Image (tube, rainbow, N blue to C red):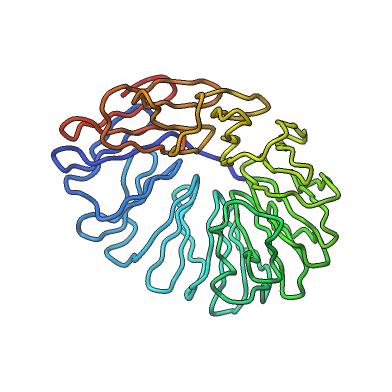
Length: 368
């Protein structure tokens, strides 16, 4: 049984009457009459704690109560929601709830995957596709704090795991990579453990179905869709993995992108770049703002904006002409030239506020 995504575009906001509204694939629904205390936006669900501290999840057109005031925190990704009641860890997926651990203090959530340390059985486990899999009793790491530290957005060749500069486990949408207690490099992929390397790797990063890493011999490799390819015999200057894409600056100073088992050489320069779901936003050698998307390069601006958001096949920003622009799935839209107070990118949905607390939602060329 594989993951069957039921993702649909969602967004949410509080109206000028302080009512909680959900935008659901073009439909606007009034969900609560009072402002929630906390809200998360996923691709298929919207979890929130209501004004009475009840934990609820909006899914498939309706809001359902999960519990009465027991939930202290929650997290949401494309398809799943994790939440904590005291030290107990739960996962919600497609309307079903599973208790992962009665005592858990360490966990990380991906699109359809949760990796966690079960404090009762004292082992690391993975939840995937409705099942729980044992992984390891111990993982490498100089301290508990850096085991699940995923704050590093770009891996540089001066960093390594052995010194404690990099985490020993990373989890993305459908894949997890980690260094076990014997310093062996393993990949959890589609419910199975792949014995990737038997010696300590220097560094690694993960995307949706791919893992980029520098092995013990300092060769740069990419594991993608179950296959490993040696990209270079030398480590890159810097690299980042995203969903189905890896961007890096090689030792030869060429900026390159690996996508769909093909390698694209972009140019001889070391750019600022951001990697997200199928997109790489970067500043080219002339200072232009460009996006690589599924094998094509698109020019967005003649300058590199200081603030932009990248998400699900999309990049959004306000340009110098004060126009809120959106690149999504190969198309470029001028969303609005109004004086926008705030805006947010929920995957590929833009929500923005203007005037006296007025909200609009833009999705696939249409404003709601």
